Image (cartoon, rainbow, N blue to C red; front, side):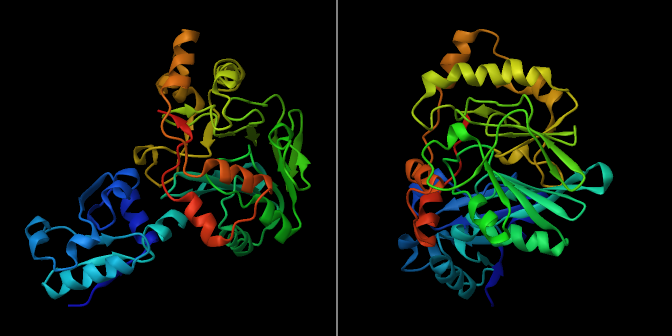
Length: 375
């Protein structure tokens, strides 16, 4: 019996379509508990690879006969070994190509909608990390917002739709993943925009992203007026695109709000966070479609695999937007924080240009889930 290969793209399709899948994860229990492939109808069995070196007979009764079985490890080698043993025992089984490393780096482009004058906006869903980035295209020009370090995917996608990347934005200085924004700007000779209050320590040239600006991409206007929105970082900046979409960065998510502590300044920034969410955003149209820079749980995905919701709906349903007592809000934001992202200080320094880790080091720095939200 031949072992099958399943790609991250194929697993993503199962996540979006809410299909069933049985995952045998052969990583260490601590790694599995910290971060795994999430799916609404997925079942799991975590048995470390080292416990299976002498054979798989003991786990055979725990495997279903009526579900697809996927073996997962860190980089694929251990899962191939286990899958081959299972196959020899008569089990129909697949392994995840590239392991959790590939799962962490997979980007799935989803068209979010059309803009006036023929433009389009796409969301790139980094399903394994919960990162969301965007491409706005209009009249042959394109802008990239909050790109990950997998820069080729954006550049190649823009080429595939005959668009020239002219602007690259980061809504803030990221701490949970390495930005590909500066590299894309260098490759495409585009303008790279960064909020100056987040850029006091950067080592490179950039264009200052400040309130009151309108940036034209083809026939589409990206409005940055009156939407300086500190709280997650001191420079966090939101965009309104085409008077229809609100790119909220890491300030507001679908089911949660941004955390203000990743520069060690939670107590200082919590008031800024509340001002942004409870006053600045309240002045915006409830009909704006919120497009955040992250999602936290798989249930936030829409039926097409995108992540979005109307601002008015979030004002009604998002708990973080409905804490009227300021002291209670302060307690929730400063005392109810999950563990900080893996290597977040090193990631911030990389995004400042202070250090230049190689690709494998960058990969290791990003391992694990994103933790940009207040739970």
